[in-house]
Amino acid sequence: MSRLFIDLYLDEDVNVLVADLVRARGFRVTTTQAAGQKGATDANQLAFATSQGNTILTHNRVHFEALAQKYFEEKKTHSGIIIAVRRPPEELSRRILILLDAVTADEVENQIRYI
Image 1: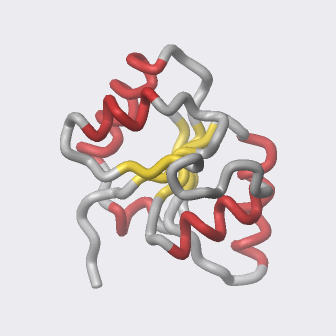
Image 2: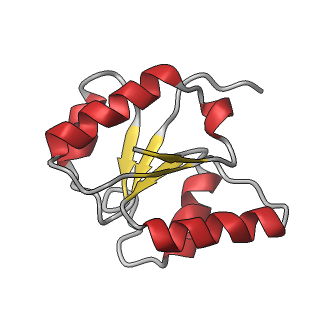
C-alpha cells in the first residue's frame, strides 16, 4: 500500500519542540518520550519506529548509518532515517518541513536522508 505522508518518530536526542512545530503544520510526529521508549538502544529505537511505520529523525549519524547498513545486509526494511545536524528547533523544523513537503513515505523507505 502506498503511503504519501511521512510520519516522524523523534529520537530522544532531538528537541521535543521540533515535534510541536512540525505537528502545527499538520504532520504526525511521535517522540521517544511520548512513546515510552526513552533510554532504549538505537537499534530498539529504529525497530520501534519501523514497527509503527514511522521515519526516525536523529542527530546520531554514526550509529544510525551503521544500523542502516546492518538492515541492508540482513535484507530487513525500515521506514526511513533522517539524520539532522544539530540546529535550533525552529531551523531544524523548517528543514524537516521542506523535506516532508518534497518526499513521500514510500520514497524514504529504506533510505537515509540528511538535513
